[in-house]
Structure formats: C-alpha cells, structure tokens
Image (cartoon, rainbow, N blue to C red):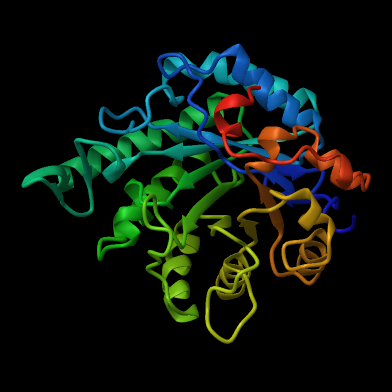
Length: 335
C-alpha cells in the first residue's frame, strides 16, 4: 500500500502514515466540554491505524460561534478534557490536530463579512472592525488553548460557508490573513497550522468562488505568507477535476500554485467495493496520485464512522472486510 503508509513530517507534526481522519461534527460534547465517550471514539480510530486525527469542528469562545448545539469548544474549562482525548489518541501512536471553528452566517443571529436577510429581517449582520478585533483575540486565545491542551497542531476552518469562508468569498480577505498571523504569533514557528477551504458551502454544493488556477493562487499565497503550513482542500468527490483541461484535484492545484503540502478529501472509501477497484475513486488511483506528488495527505471522513479499523484494513489489503458506510451512520454509530 505504498505510499499511503509512508511517514510524513511537518514541523513538530510527525505522522506514521499519510491517512488522516477528516473533521466531522458529532454533537456529543456536554456544555461544550469533551466527554469520555469522545475520547474513546477518537481512540478507536487512532488504534485503527491512522496517522493523524483532525477533531470535529471546535468552537472559539465567542457568543455567536455555535450553530449546532452540543459541539465542543476551546475554552479554559475544556483543557483537561481535551488533554484526556489527546492522551487517548497519542497512546495509540497517532497525532492530533484540533479544527478551530466559528459558524458565522450558518447560525442565527450572527456576524459575517456580509449581511443575510430572511423574511425582511437581518439575521446575520456585517461584522464591524470592533467585531473583528474581538474575534482576533478570541482566535488568539483558542490557539494558545490548543497548545495547552496537548494538540500537535491546529486547523483553521475556512470552508463550507462558515465565518472565515464568508470573508474569503468577499472582498474582505485581509481579516482571514490577520487570523492566521495572530494564530502563528501565538503558537510559535514550529506548531503546524493547517487551513481548510472548499469549493462548496452548506446548502450550496455547486457554489464555488474559485474558477481558475489563477484565482486559486490569489487565494492561497496570502494564506501561505501569513503562516499557513498545509492546505486542506475540501471537495465532494476528490477525483472530479475542478478546472477545465486538467485532471488535477483541488488539493493538487493548491499544492502546485502555493508550494505548500496539501491534503485531499472527498468521498474516499465510502463504497468499499468501488474503493477496491481500479476506477477513479479506487485505492489504486489514490495511491498513484499520491505517489506522483499530487498531494501529501489523504483525509477520510464518513467511511471511518462505520469502520474504525479502516486504515489497518486498507494497509493489510483486507478491503473486503471493511464495513460499508450507510445513510444514518452519523447518528447511529457511536463511538
């Protein structure tokens, strides 16, 4: 299964292989605090052979950050619980990254780079400069808590229509660069900062704001210069080309135009039978594209909900033993 199981390093992040658990909201925190059930959930996937786990979206401590109820936070009162989660992950030989999140225009009421009207009422207002300065300090605090909680890195969630994505889709991108710089100043030079961005947003799967390699370059170079170490390019199906005339994935293009390592994600391994084959969504295609240097890491999402041993079963070519994903697994299968 070379090169999926080759080591990878990025600053202080040392991975035993290239397989990553993608962030997936599960809603099992209690008042924002991670639980022992969550620790066991992540431990099982770590024991299943992954190189890295990226946590579910974890909110900064801001009164408008949450759109989804029982999701975890990065607050002073969550540090010990996150340390327990990280101890469970690290004990299985796996690294951990926390995804730092603010829901922005996906919650009501909220603030964003633009206004949202519903039924003649403004439910999301334009963030003022005072709002942004407050948010910067809260992102800075979250970054410090990520280090204190024992994570090996952090990922800024700039995708899927949430707060930072609203800025990237507007003419106000400089605020995102400020967030990256504030994060880098807080965590120091060797603590990896990943950045997730996307072709789609919640409720708009075809709503991409990047239409050419030149536009992508204009997006990612300022992120790199502000302090991002790795780009996590989120699409629905990674093998579908994003730009006309090229078979490169979004992650492949991000790597090419930025010079940074990249992570691919999008429907990998959802159907074990297809993944075992030689089609564009199969393991052979994934391996060959990784070996060719198109991207550096491979993030697997929903397939890991029904199969915690996914990585080990791929490694030892037990693809026929992988439990298939099914609709409803997000709610039914835990941990």
